[in-house]
Amino acid sequence: LEMEAALREALDRGDFTLHYQPQIRLETQRLHRVEALIRWTHARWGAVSPMEFIPLAEECGLVGQIDRWVLENAVAQLARWRADGLVVPGMAVNLSPERFAHGDLVEQVRHVLAVARVPPGDLTLEITERLMMIEEVSVHDTLDALSDLGVTLSIDDFGTGYSSLSYLKRFPVGELKIDRSFVKELDIDAANRPLVRAMIQIGQSLGLTVIAEGVERETQSRMLKADGCCMGQGYHYARPMPPDAFADWLHAWN
Ligand code: G
Ligand code: G
Ligand code: NA
Ligand code: MN
Image (cartoon, rainbow, N blue to C red; front, side):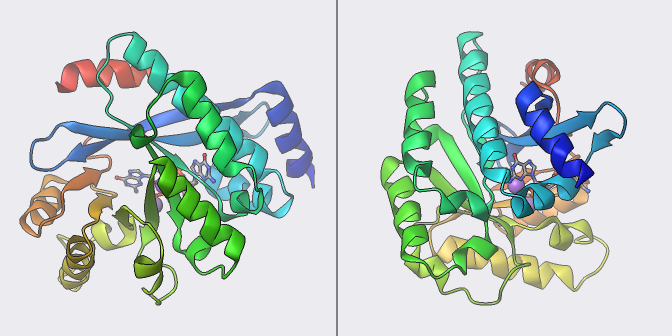
């Protein structure tokens, strides 16, 4: 309850910040896009992890406002970097399933992109398998409308959710993000590799982009590349960074 009040206050006061983590093309080692990740530092509690406060925000109905703030700020940041001459090909933003209960999501995405003059093709929305299991017409219609708008839909934490894969043929998904639990011990525990390979093949055969998250070592990135995975994200390339640090990182990376 105390944290709920603190979340409301943080929204009012603008206490959230965004960090940005690069997603890298394994073939060329070039930047593909960046993922925006929310950060919150509370005056007394210090840094509070989104793994703690996002579920709470979902429960108390605040996640819609938070995700809206993230979308606006991440897209504005992309436009600002570009105005500064940085080549940042795209931005990925996480959307909570609860966000889809609001009918205005599509209009909001369209509006935010138009205001910042960012093409829809440069925005990726990361959604979870949990959302795909909601059998509601409004959710299906929203996913279709977002896809029609031209944004890419990415399945975050792929492989950890529900076992049904049928949503992959029903929904306009463009990307699969292999969950980091599979990548974590890819080069340590041999049982992981067949699973990762199978996920890459599912993506490839459906014409989807496949990205592996949680890449921490060169050996993992080599295995992923050898198995046909086209993109990676993780501490091996860079940690999530504030905007200025990201700009410095990009200058050094290129
Ligand atoms: O970056 P980090 O490990 O702290 O993120 C923890 C979790 O919080 C991840 O599952 C991530 O998807 C989620 N998360 C981070 N930023 C956002 C956000 O802006 N909106 C939502 N809904 N989830 C986020
Ligand atoms: O659920 P989602 O995929 O959005 O979670 C992203 C989270 O993973 C973020 O909290 C981010 O800080 C974290 N993360 C990013 N790269 C790595 C990594 O290489 N190793 C670990 N352990 N966590 C990572
Ligand atoms: Na994500
Ligand atoms: Mn993930």
